[in-house]
Length: 233
Image (cartoon, rainbow, N blue to C red):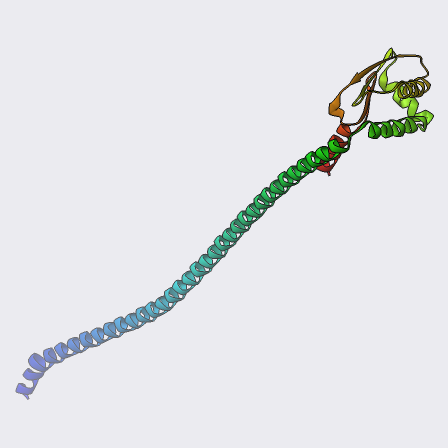
């Protein structure tokens, strides 16, 4: 009994205390380990979620970048297309202008050649008889002028009218001069002096200067008017 009491008092109780303390330490260690495990699990879940979120963000960033690249590519392609269209339009306009210039030059050359041909042709048929016919047409035209037209002509040749200057390609006969003077005096309602000249460049016909007004009834002026009219057209 004494031995049992001694063993219980001095051996078992300290041993049990040591075992209890070790058990408590082990349990605490296990508890801490469980806590660390829980924290590790939480960290792992957090990391997995973060990894998933990061993958989503990266994919969104890639999608956004691809969208921006597509937009920029579309913009650049449109700008290139517009630039090409503008250059094509400029080239077209430039080519049209060049063709128009060539056409105008060709037409002008053709008109000049036509006028020269007509001049040479009319020179071969320009005779006093043709001039007499042109004189008759001129006199007939002047006699058929309306009063309004005559008033307009009077306003154009001015108030101080003293002389009428007449140029003909061929010499005029006395009868032709008298016919002209009578017609012009009736038109101007004045008795004026007449000055006559001869200029073969008229080919056939007359050029009459009444003040500031010049009447051309000759082949040269008609050919010139024809060429100018053709060029204007």
